[in-house]
Length: 270
Image (cartoon, rainbow, N blue to C red; front, side, top):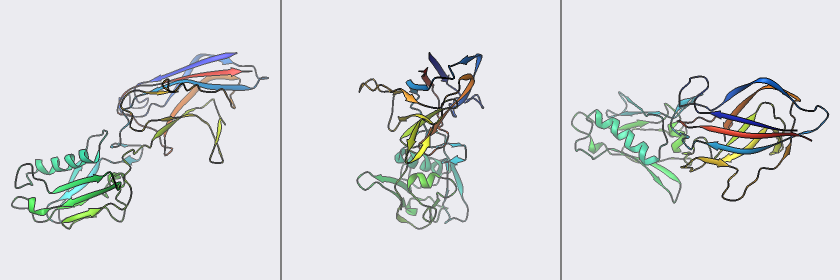
């Protein structure tokens, strides 16, 4: 017997909003029965995912949206709260300076005192402070990345994320702009024990590369002729409902700005 299961989700199942996970539960109108005396196999026919996977967001205990800036050496602070989205280092720099510009911090329009930059050759992020750019009333620039995980995303560790002295300051870690990693894993509650990963039994159906994707993510890829194999797994003989979960490379629920997740599975008893 061959059974096809389709799953589609375009909004967060809890909030009902575009932004969020694409996890969910499917309740079948009537149960499906497989032969209990036969072994069960599955294969992933198709996964299609939105490429709108943010690195700046506040959800599920992850917050990369905020940093604090000061023009009086840290005596008072203003919070830079970024909108959720997909940012480069240059975009982060522009957003921080935009907040300061709205507060009329700069002496000359378009000449900014914060310069967050990335060297692609060394894979290092730098932050430069120049208080000479401040208008009257400002004394000393400062920036604190430690109020969220934005600093860690940029490569600044917990002991090197607050700066109150002019000059060039260097991140001590590699940046993680692919904040959710370079792949996602698909899980289905009724399909267990699918593979061994680094010596541990896993129930992931497949691992889908997402890094640097700008168009709809399709797996298996038609471009290289990939065909998903049949895989032995632990699958119940009676199916009334099932959960689908999409995890990022760090084992957290993957979140999307918007867009669809579509998964097609085939289950076979042989």
